[in-house]
Amino acid sequence: QQPLQETSSLMLRLSCSTALRHGTRSQILRNVRNSVTVLDYSSEVPAAGSTQQPRSAGGLFAGAHPNSVNGNGTSTRPAASVLRPPVNDIQRNAQQNGSLMSFKNEVEEIVNLCKQQTPDSARKAEELLRTIIQYIESNKDDVGDYTLIADRPKNIHFELVISSLVKNNNVQRAWNLNEYMDNLFQGKRYDARPVYTCFQAILSEFVKSGDAKRAEMTLDRMFELWNAKVIEVEPETMTIAFNNVINAYAKTGNAKKANDMLKFMGRLYDHGVHPDSISFNIVLKAYAQCGGRDAPQHASKLLRFMEECFEKGDPHVRPDRVSYNTVMDCWIKYGSAKEAVKQSEDLFDRMWAMSKNGNRDARPDGFTYNTLMNAFARTGGELAAVKTEDLLRQMEEMYQAGDTTVKPDTVTFNTAIKAWTNIGDWQAAENAEAILTLMEELYKGGEVKSAPDRISYNSVIHAWTKCGDEEAAERADDVLRRMEIFHEANRSKSKAEPDVVTYNSVMNAWVQSKSNKRIYEKVAPLFDRMMRESEQGRTKLMPDHIS
Image 1 (spheres, rainbow, N blue to C red):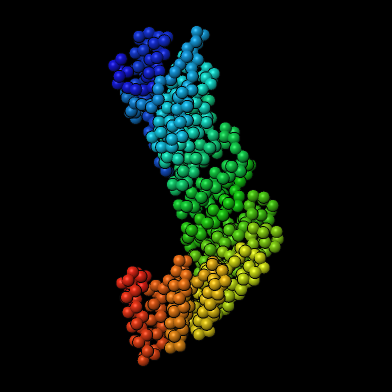
Image 2 (image 1 turned 90 degrees about the vertical axis):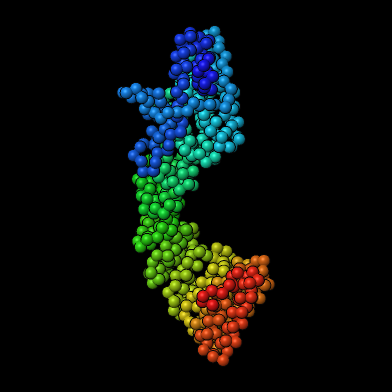
């Protein structure tokens, strides 16, 4: 009785119960001694970069037997605390011709614990599931053919527990339990069978947490089992799993590793797994986000390969507007202004050519136009500004003809204003203000997405400031008044509230005007207003060192 009072191990109580039915006092004591050491469930997931194989990461029966000892008699496993299952003892119904067990109550308890969706209930469900399986394994003579036990834990219960652990942010225990199921299957010790849903739940959690290396380790084992026809899913489903891992590396900024995974997929065509457009687009996005001097070249080369695959009839790879837009964006971010314009124009032309040849998914959209316009605006000069406004006009015409994917928005108009602002002469400022006026009119007509914002007004004021004369300063003052009126009239929706940059630009317009008689009488009131308004709570107008 003393050992029974010191431990609440379900294994121990079951073993003693068996001996009381069928055995002797010595068998009871032997069962007590063999059951005191309970397996350690707290083993770590293999560290990222570890040479340790994933399958030996610490499932219940991973590697050596948990109670094995080395040459000097000490345990080869870490010391484990006694398991304290939160359920009643397993009920057994003995028959004269053998023992027929039922785990109905325990299986129902596992299901109920998983439904509670708390970290503690998920842990208890895992402990109970492991304990039942361990009991069956440790009492094979008494249990007999366990497959005849209708109410024993099955695959669905492993899936429920793993899903519950993942949902309760305990991916490590989920990993260990999945390894335990894998080891049971590999050792043919129990008819649990690894399933895709368990691997995918764990993989998705690693992707979500940004642990790309462990996501890849999970994928490696998943693919191994799928290739051995243990996991039965369509090849397209495995492609999704690969895409998740590629995305994990992309999110961590490792474009090279994402591309390496893509290349590995390319070698799996004979196995039925193949990269698709999503795979390529994720890697392209990684190059656009991660940057680097060579990022635009790598992205362009990958896009060319996509085009070649499509032209050769590969049904899985179809470059779309996302592909082209991403590469264009990469050139804008990391290429020189001149090279960005050249490459962006080439990409734009290729998109139209691809679209006219039947690939409607490659047709330019609003993002395409905005990006190309931004490339022109960065270069400066009247020619670039004219091309930018031509693109804006083309978008308007296509939208009026029914193509809603190219509807100009605030970003579009602001880019066109920026192109004229960069020139710095009177006519350019007039053109910039004309676009601002168009935005105000469109907004009054119900085009909410064309509403001018703070950038719109500040850019036009800056355009007048560059002109450097008194009349230009007056025009900058007028734009400020229009901005205040627009903001007050649309206060609940407006994004055009003046800020310190707005007022600084107008004051600077007067300073640049060299109108000595009027500079102070214009600048001082603006500064005083900034001070007064900021003291009343409009913190965006707080004067700075430029003021």
